[in-house]
Image 1 (cartoon, rainbow, N blue to C red):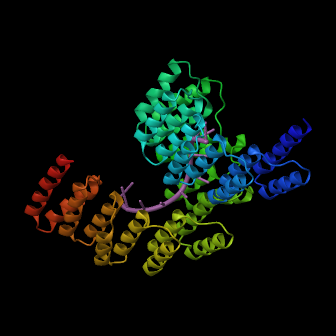
Image 2: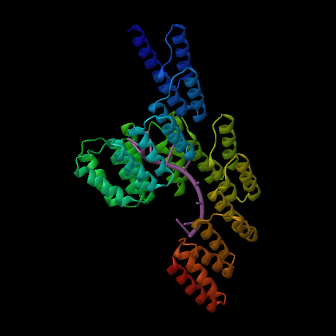
Image 3: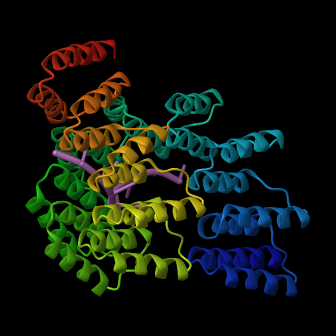
Length: 456
DNA sequence: TTAGGGTTAG
């Protein structure tokens, strides 16, 4: 009895240290426990594995798993659930699937959490059909879906372009007695906002208010972002004020949303004021906050400050991501420093980032603006993946250089590949062809575009 | 386990 009690206490103590990211202290408690004759059990190792997955790395968690096995403790469903969640969080699809397979092979029964995580995994990787199959497996295996199951399902449908199905499911569940939680409302409001369905979003927001639940920082940030996206800047700023008064600006989310929106609408002074507020409030800066700061520097043309900050971030041990590098590459392009941008693109590759479509698009635009259109064309041809930004940028710059026939060819290949392009861009090509005496080519071009559209 | 923030065209 004494042993059970002390083992439980030990695990509570370890869980507390793990929760506050003090893994070394958690490990020290284990050593103390062993000294006192209390050996770590399956709960101890599961707690550690979960914490290592969250705060260190999945590999570190695997080494705990090895230690667990060496100690003769058999991993259970919770062990695998933690590892699986870690793999999904780190965007490791094949590793996630391997873990699930390994679990089945070892005869460890998956529970509803396992299936929830697996379903989330498939949605995250844009595989809604597989995700739905997992949902069916929950039922087929006689497990009961829990509220989170439905939240994951609604969220996954929203994110994979099935907004109607998500909304329909939400209403259906409500008819069957499902009481939405704040998470559910936030998922749905976010999905509706991103799909541009503002009226439905405001209906759900009203329902959230009537349900007696209190909107949280996430609700506010979601709605605020939606305001900025639909160019209601003043309304967005009013939401920020409300968030500040409610104490909802305890992290960088709201500030970063506002700063990026202000920068995009060229309100640099206001963006700087907001950034100062973020820095003054002592909020711990994460990578997104740093990226926003670098973005602000770049838009002010302060490239040296931006690169210096990037250097400091890396020296401080934080790993920059593709956003950081792309923002810098775009900044260098915008000030006409093409060589610098090219060097940074190479640096990004040496840092292990794969070819980045946005960075390439910035390069295309930068090269064109620097008058190196032929090089931009070569760059364009070497690109394996292109999007509407790639095409629009090149076509517009070709028009600016009055190379309308070349522009029409690029635009046609864009439409043929099923990509949408601004009507104004298309108009510029047509007008250019007419005004430079290529009337018959313009007419042919127009009918080819129509045909290409019909075929798509 | 599930919800919010950051990059490119006009």
